[in-house]
Length: 402
Ligand code: ATP
Ligand code: MG
Image (cartoon, rainbow, N blue to C red; front, side, top):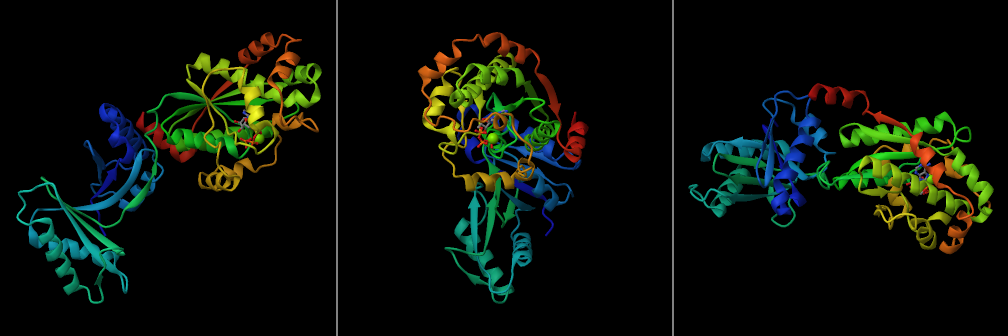
């Protein structure tokens, strides 16, 4: 079927009152970036929907590009038809025929925003339904659960026909929600946390703690590859801050009783991330924490660790099951990278029996015998900041645009 436009439904953003225009502009920008390789397309946005006018571009290829864009609830390839009944009949038949396979059921759903049109919605349903039944042997009506739902929308400028509704990525448009720092390890969880945050419209910068020579260059490459995937998802580049963490970890090991080193390590990571956040003017910190998975992620642990800052900590995975997190990691293509075997800075000094219920007062007391502040400042000053660009294909599209 030769579609000539794709109708995009906003879903949630259309409920955003006065902010609506801002949201629509952000979405339009995301769509434009994703479709840079299609020079002929035109984007038309109105208050309640957006059209990508194809002007001869391949509809299937465009659909693939629209699927990952945040802020799209669903979309439908559509045909624009002149407001003329004979043409409507011909085009409706053509469209349903192209979707029909043996034994399929159908219904017609007409909608009319132009009340001056010569037929009412009921009349359209009957007329077109009858025409289809006459011309497609074996086709049957099913109003409750049809295989094919032919939508006929009569608007002021034309009639639009569509029959497929393809789910979009959901969420809110990129960049519509402010900036947050993602604590990115090489594990499975934190990239997924980054994905979910971006899906809610947040801009993210990644922070990774690196402890050479205990963690290898390979571990760093892994985090760079994860960041690259996140950049592709974001449709632009991502800033990655790599924090030299060896000294801090060594001092913790010397100063803090072994069963509290993990709690203290997490507290120092959080303090440093918060410092970077302040410099970068972010408003929150995101982690891949998930309640109860490991010793550092019990509620008692979070209570002891979180004490070092009152910056909002977003934990998108907090209540998810591990299986679902893994499925999502697979879907966004980070799982394979995360599964590479290289060690993380937190796993190298892991004590034999970390406290699962650390006490806030105790960790504060242990840390009070040493002034960590200069070490934290030093780590922040020595941060290596890298701009990670999307993979080759996406990068080319991006550069062509700017
Ligand atoms: P992940 O799969 O994200 O590593 P996890 O289940 O292994 O999570 P932890 O290793 O306890 O859990 O880490 C909890 C969170 O702390 C991570 O999701 C991440 O946000 C942060 N984190 C852990 N290690 C690092 C690191 N080296 N650099 C930056 N953030 C880290
Ligand atoms: Mg981990």
